[in-house]
Length: 134
Image 1: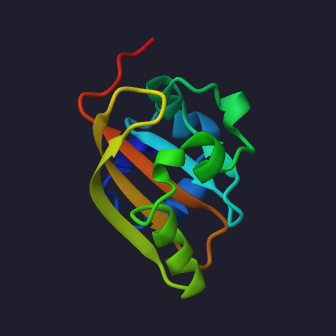
Image 2: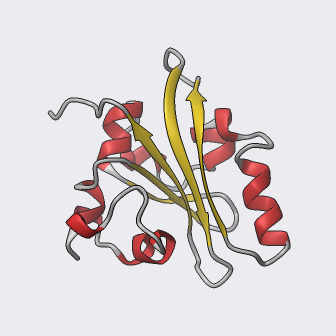
């Protein structure tokens, strides 16, 4: 897949991210956290790993709202995923947010993505400026 076609604002991104190979996911210029219906992380890209300082090997399998990012365990994020799932509705919302877990408060844009027919849900994290490359 051509990552030039995948932007933080790309329509239909939930389905696209589910199928993107890991190396292409790692090339995206924003953070990607993909988790299943039980909240356990299945996809975690290199951008988010570097920015949040978490090793992807230790993150996969963790609960997104309890273990990885308790700062998302609130009505703005976690509850929106729960409500969308309970209503079998799609979720695609972008909002400003302040990350506070394991870092100084950091202003970002987040995009919440879920589709009733998709196995994975996503939190996308857009930081400005982007973290420096290794």
